[in-house]
Length: 328
Image (cartoon, rainbow, N blue to C red; front, side):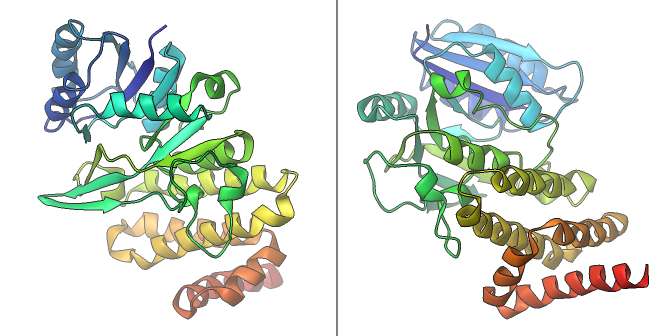
C-alpha cells in the first residue's frame, strides 16, 4: 500500500500543468502515488500528462486516467478517490503547485497526530503577489473534535475553509464514505464535502504547515466565469442545509449553515458585472427560491444580525417571494 495518494484533476491547463507536475517530482517518493485525472481537456493537457506519467514513474507510483466526458472537478476528484490505494490521501488542483518536500512533511504531521484528518494553511498566488491564508482554527498541533469546529455561527470557522487540497485524510474516512464529493457539481463542490467531514469524522487537527500554492485569477477558472455552471452553488448549499437539518445537533448547527448560505448568495448578487444577463436573472430567481426553502426561524435570526448591506439585499429577495406567493 502506498503511504500517500495525491489526486490531481486537470482540465484545459496546458499553461500551468508543467509547473504542477514539476513540483510533484520535487515531492516524489517511491511510496507516494500520484493519480493524474484528465477531465476531457480540449487543449494540450492530455499530451503533457501522458509524458509526465511516464517520466514520474521513475520516482513514484503513477496512474493516469482520462475521462471520456467532461464531468467537472467533483467528478474528477471522485475518479481519483476510486483509484487511490494509499494509507493517506490528499488533493492538488492541476493549476496549483507545491513547495519541495511539502508532501513528506504533510504525511509526517498526520502520522504524528494520529487523527482522521489534518488541515494546513496555504499561499495564495495572484500574478506575482503572494499572501498567506491561515486555516481559521487557533489551536495548532492538537487533536480536536471536528463537530465543535463548525461553530460559532457568527464567525469564520473551519467549515468556511473548504479547500480540499489544504490537508491530508486517513483512508478510514474514504472507507466510511466521507471523502467523495457530490458528483456533477461544477462549483462549490467542497462545501457539502467539508460540512460532512466535520459532522461525521471523529478527530482532526490544524498544523502550521505551508506548502500549497493556490493560483488565483486564472482566466479559465469557474470563479472568473459568470456562466450557468456557477449556479451550482445553490445545489451545493441546499445539500448542506438538507443534511444538517437531519443531524442530531441540527438546532445548534443550522444557524451557521443558513448564515453561510446567505452570505454566499449576497456575495454573488453583489458581483452583477460578472454574470451573463440571462444567468443573472436565473441567479435572482434561484436565490429567491433558496431563501424560501431555508428554515425561516433561522433565516430571520440571520437577517437580524447580518450587516445592513447584505441583509437589505436578502430581505428584498425574501419580500419578492412573499409577494409572489400572495399574488398566487
